[in-house]
Amino acid sequence: MSNDKDANIPMTAFGFEALKAELAELRARRPAMVEEVAAARSQGDLSENFAYHDARQNLGMLDGRIQTIEANLTRAHVVEESAAKGVARIGSTVVVRDEFGESTYQIVGPTEGNMARGLMSIASPLGSALLDRQAGDTVTFKTPGGERQATVVSVS
Image (tube, rainbow, N blue to C red; front, side, top):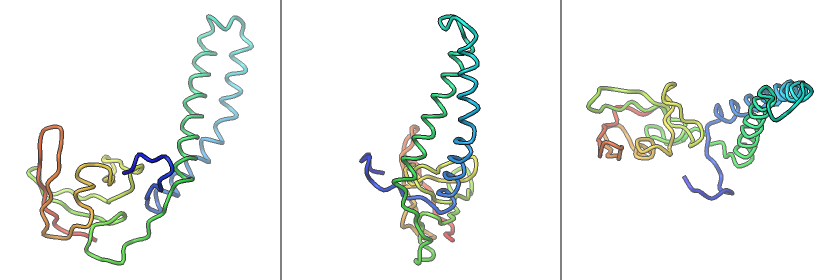
């Protein structure tokens, strides 16, 4: 993935909609957090008012996440499902076999990766190695523990 701040961010339609939903939810929570800051501010001396500092920090983190999502949505390029069936692309479901057994992943854009949910980012070493591969291909990818190999079992 390019580090260019103006480059498009490829993502699935599901990932795009999930970001829009998260943004709406965060924007809905923001007024209550602003109210928490105001209420804590009214409690007196701000230098020792931990409720105020905590509320400001939480609001700052929320605002930062909102800005990040807005920037990602502005640069998002929703990738349609590939016409090349059987070839691993964003949106494909790929089954791979390595020394630990078989695992199933959905290939997703760089901002959507979530291994707990089986979403493999194209920015990850394995995700980038799987791009444009077909069943039967063996890929080599780098990990902190050294190079590893995996075989593509199926792509759908």
